[in-house]
Length: 265
Image (tube, rainbow, N blue to C red; front, side):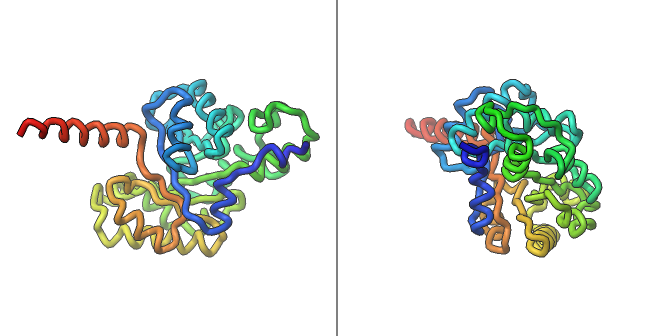
């Protein structure tokens, strides 16, 4: 058996076919059951958010390993785009790193270097990857397989990033440019204005540069607006960050409580 027969990335395969993929963000769940829930619900990816949650690396690793066994891609948003965060979440079982607040091509290249094994990057080869069932393979085979399966997702969350969209999207090793719309609108003085004409301009710019460089645009920050999600997918976006486990639970619980509260009226 080869390393490539053990490990592949189904999300990358779907994107290569032009299909739309979706993720659920994890901020509340602490146990591996969330991976099974994501699989049953039909999500392609779990987006484990270490930037905006108190989740530990240990809990993250357990969720990632469950995802690998279920065919759901585990991706982790790191709290800082530094090698000690990037390499640790990947070594723990993630197949993708989500890098927040990327503002330049140099920053994107630094994330790629931290995420990829030599010769493509500078990530250390641990010699025992959970992605490969801890089996031993020749180092060149391991590097080729791990690098091919590992995705780098950079987030645009500022006007500066948008101004440099073309150069960032051109970076070799970047797979997806995810628009962090809430932070970007806040940076532009347009917080919460999802219907502002600037939003369509933002997505149009990112979709265009992604198409130019063979990358994929991701829709983020629009969990409350499925109509706008659909619009930007029609424009060419192929990855949608659909919302958090907390918002899904609270939304369903609130609806049920309201429904029951109306039984007596």
